[in-house]
Amino acid sequence: MKIKDSLILGLIMGIILPVLGVLGFYYSKFAAVDLAQFVQVATKHKVLSPMLSLCAVLNLATFFLFLNKNYYLVARGIILATIIYGVTIVILKFVM
Image (cartoon, rainbow, N blue to C red; front, side):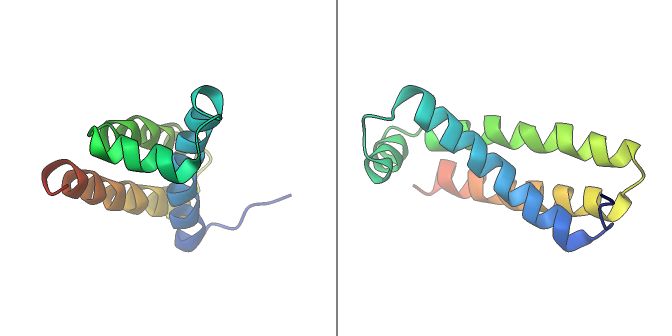
């Protein structure tokens, strides 16, 4: 199966991967707690932004994978999603 080189595909992948990372962390450590309660407590104790920062690192590996396969538009989409996550993390860190 050939992947289409698309900015939208990279943006979608770049947004979904960190969310999957947070969900993986949630299910591995805190599955007994409700997901909404987990996010609420993580926000209250100011650990949501560091957790998102760690999960955004998944985009780095994906970026280099697509860069090496010459899918430059997908790689650009992943970088764009990472920038969006960066702005979100800064807002969570300093506003909330």
